[in-house]
Amino acid sequence: MVLRKGCFMSHVEIHGYAIVSDDDRIADETGRTPDVLRNDADWAYFQAQLNLADVTVLGRLGHEANPNPRGRLRMIVSSSTRGIERRADGWWWNPQALSWTEAVGAVLPHGGRVAVPGGRRVFDLFLGIGYDAFHLTRAEGVVLARGIPVFSACGAGTSAEAVFAEAGLRPGSREILDPAGPVSLVVWRR
Image (spheres, rainbow, N blue to C red):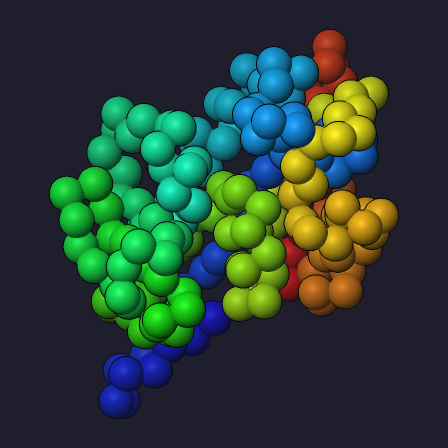
């Protein structure tokens, strides 16, 4: 994504990250990530990817549930602000009040890499904005039938892969992160 401000142009690259069950769920029915979706190899990969990001965008509940011990720059999606607001714990952004282009221009005026670890509403929001890449990790053999889907369309029976294809993303090769899981990774790119 290229942002224009007057004659200044900056590049923003958006990367989504999720570990899902075979039925494309990111959480159980209570909204919590169950132990069957926690994997050390995936966590190490995810943390290394967050280290490459200039800002991490997540929902308010994810922000509150996940401490930020490394002090990474965060943008929290919330309706509790009128646009974009700098608070002690990060930038708070209301997408109903301010466009993504304006918000990311305030947070990353020179461009950079954006990490989007969700949840579902945030994943849906960025599906409309446009991912440059989505790193989809799958905990193979795990089913969470009443859980929270990665995208709203997955709750209606559409696979995550079909959602990505419809959004113009194409799969890379499948990589095994943990053969004991097994836990696999496919990066979908524009």
